[in-house]
Image (tube, rainbow, N blue to C red; front, top):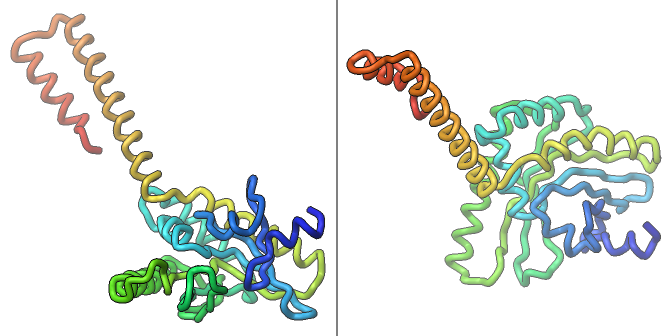
Length: 243
């Protein structure tokens, strides 16, 4: 990227968002349903680097790490968070746009803790706080009847302040990379529903094929009458529809 291209990805809060895929500017980056990696150069001698879910869609998506569909991903997610040193923090924030949807948002910290102190209970607590902010936001929409969300949750999965040192910056990105990759694997509600539907369809098809093969084997053996009915009944007990 040249300097002109870099400036396309600087947000109104003076964060540089690291683009993903074919994104052309910050307008595409800040609305994605994935987390994004950003860094801020506000202080002369310090850089702040973080992995953040900045949109309601991305927060809703990462919440599905709690879904049974993502059990392994959740275990790996917590494991990677625990590997970070004590300088990293995880933050739940209230994102406010009180006057119009295009204004620079204001952020209020609701909950913060050292990232490496995460566990199942703490992770659930993070999303409970996010749920409460979302519920409050929904109530505000009904009461104020505005055309945009004045309030929304924002989740900083992990962020850290470091010196302006290239090697330290690369090291932070290296440590955030596994978390980013896991976060990208988390599916939306619609994707999970479709995956579950396809999985159930495959299971039904496999069961039906096993049943046909079993029936064919009985016929070849000459099994019939009461013996046939008992064999079928026993097969159905051993191969229920729902595992």
